[in-house]
Amino acid sequence: MASKSGALSVLKIRKMKELGEKIAVVTAYDYPTAAMADAAGVDAILVGDSFATVVQGRTTTLGAKLEETIYHAEMVARGAKRAVPIVDIPFPYCQLGPLEAVRACARVLKETDATAVKIEGGAKRAETVRAVVEAGIPVLGHCGLAPQSVKATGYRVQRDVDVLLANCLAIEEAGAFAVVLECVQREYAEEVSKKLSIPTIGIGSGAGCDGQVLVFHDLFNYANQEPSETPKHARVYRDLHKEIVEGLGEYVADVKSGAFPGDAESFGAK
Image (cartoon, rainbow, N blue to C red; front, side, top):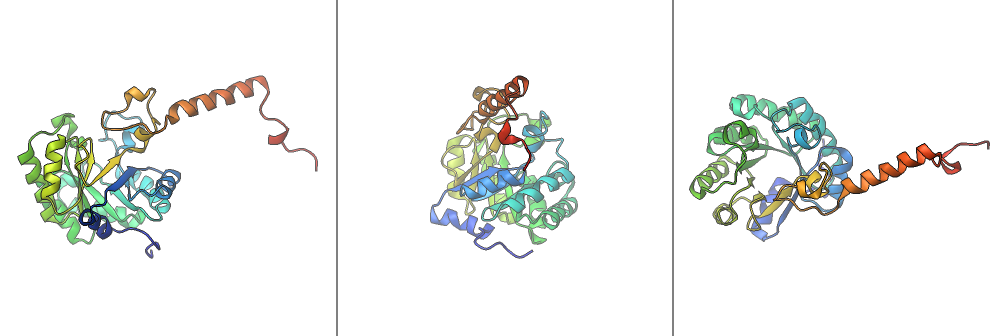
């Protein structure tokens, strides 16, 4: 498919670090959400495997399937006119080695018109990242907290700067155009960001990163009952959960009372 006029590229995303321009990233899982993010000026849209938790209601992202990922990514790529659509490769394709990873990543790009993929893991995934990049597929790395390894490591802030730097440098050397730093102690995230030539995209890692990514549903309290349930690293910009529940309650009341539908919503004689 021909490139979209005015669309950003991974090369432009990488150049933003050199220019000192912060990179704004948000997740999306369908066409209308992607279109809204694109219209708002987001630089990249991530089809995160987080759809398993915020859309499907699972407790971890491990249940995300490749076919489901492709389903969501195809819609998002269609809605991203300017922003770079990036797709999270779900567990366990990248853990199975370079060949399986290349096959999965190639399917994603071939079937969704996405621009790039995201591969979780540090130095242990460097060989896999290199193979995917050599196949002509741009890769966004992911270091720090590793949700796909939650069974082994749990959820915890990453506080070993030497390990973090070694992992990030390995991913950079393997050819990634940028790297996500998830839940890293902010001083260490800033230190690593200064030592890398590629951009760092933080989530729960402080303002010293070159950009930030948040889950759409966290930004708008879309999946939570109360704003207090939003993760510490996120900020609620609008409480859509409250607005939608109240609106639905008004609809239910109008149906029960007979106030809906009225003449304006009904068809009569010409």
